[in-house]
Length: 120
Image 1 (cartoon, helix red, strand yellow):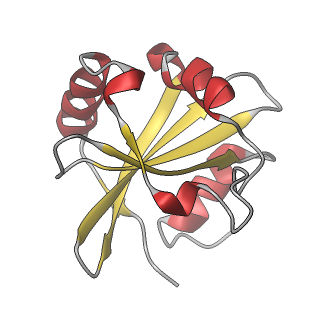
Image 2 (tube, rainbow, N blue to C red):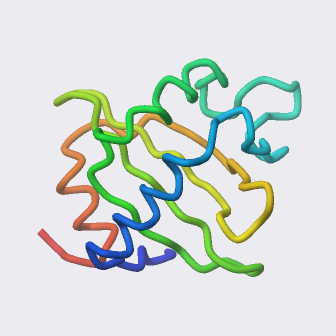
Image 3 (cartoon, rainbow, N blue to C red):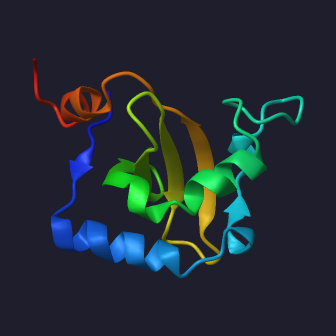
């Protein structure tokens, strides 16, 4: 299992600030976002993703994961107690690339700690 790489407060703030300066329409959508029939892979269409993306004050965590070509950055949005979402980007590209977006329900804080390798 891949491990989330914890970012310090300053780096998370820098990344969120950078994303605030990027309009959603300027972000490229990766082919992985869609399934083989051209539908959103995880059930969130681009209109829903854009509504989530613009709520920067709802971001509760940002982390990165290494993959074979660099890093993927994941932004966790907690919209309310029952609705949380992950938006995954490749930020080392121009234009920035949205890889996937999906619902991330349940106790989001507990799931994040588990993702960082902490046991409960």
